Length: 230
Ligand SMILES: C[S@@+](CC[C@H](N)C(=O)[O-])C[C@H]1O[C@@H](n2cnc3c(N)ncnc32)[C@H](O)[C@@H]1O
Image (cartoon, rainbow, N blue to C red; front, side, top):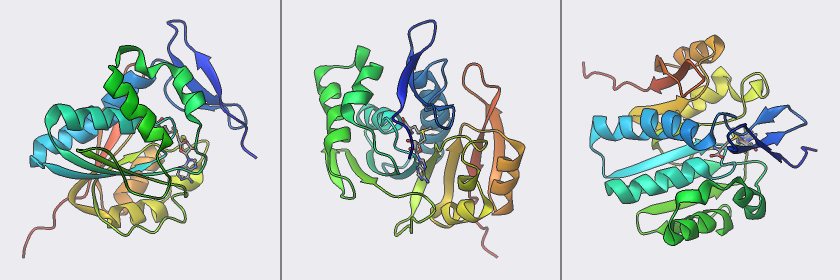
């Protein structure tokens, strides 16, 4: 049985969750919001939007966790006026009572706070409209058993690290994710490990090693390139 995660803080008072049983945090101890914005929002979402000018985007996340990536994406959908369908896999849902103690909302308005509560309290396994621009389906299932029925523009691969959950960073599971991405679709992850890069390349992704968030040199962005017409 996994233990209930506990809250840990860094010297600046920034908080994240820690799973003692696997000795792993949910985010960088140097700041969850800074890390998520860099890896998933800037290198994934904004890079993709700049490339394609899409106004409708479908995202699959591996690891809903504290809902931070989902919330930052929701905020961008309002700011940049695009519609987002967001599907997120999670095996161990967290309670809102625990997540709210992370104080992500220090600078949020009342409306933003209420959107965050909705992300956490809406039903699982059901598509729910959180805002007119953001629809969420939290799927209580592991990636191993997930059978994608739709295709996505972007994947946030935010599982626990490959040293802790090696079974999720395999060629077999990356193949499943490659197959459910649209052409020119993007997968981003905070890991820049050589084995991860090689497994992504093995299933056909073009992989870039790009600058990581503060205190981390690199991260990976993998693109499913369009096959040129003969
Ligand atoms: C690094 S945390 C994700 C943080 C999250 N994206 C956020 O914004 O807070 C990894 C998450 O993956 C979940 N997880 C563990 N096993 C999984 C599996 N087999 N499939 C999908 N998610 C899994 C964990 O429970 C945890 O919530």
